[in-house]
Length: 246
Image 1 (spheres, rainbow, N blue to C red):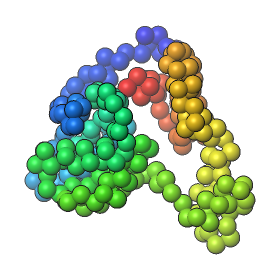
Image 2 (image 1 turned 180 degrees about the horizontal axis):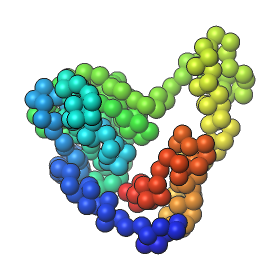
Image 3 (image 1 turned 180 degrees about the vertical axis):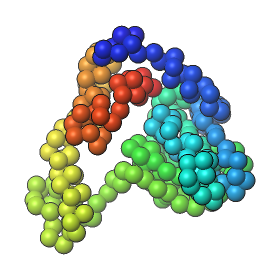
């Protein structure tokens, strides 16, 4: 495929993914595809990490074999990366009900099915919502969660954001910087409101135009990477196309 001035070849990415130990299991009638990379450390901490495998691909090595990357053996993890229902290579549900709570319960089933009696969960973006649900459910064996997209703020901060007010004076300098980032999202995040209120309109229009979807995603990479608005300073075009494809 010749796209964005590059000869894009999905087969290269496919080969990388196929080199990882991948499995499929059925939970509540839906096939769940997952990657399971075990550490050589017998005391490694099991970690379930929902989301795209490409999102965490480069971290699998440091997580499972930290000593090879200058870390400590006791920091090793067994990594389980399930694809959420309807995403990636997992099956598509035929009915409703696969909300974050349902997915969180399914991940607990998966980890226990793999023989783990205790584990932790980490997530970003949609995966953070699932990890948060798991934290609320607190299934036996879940030791803790970590999210890199916390989706809640104190009531007074939420009120100020909704009203377009300056950051509350009680916030620290770091918190004020985070507030300004949220303010920017509220002012420029019209696409988020559109996805919440008119998901089909946006979904069908993007699905009908590969070039339109690429442009839409390119804009998001520009906004969400530490690149100063130039995503190609952080990601290659192939990496961006990989994520769009998967």
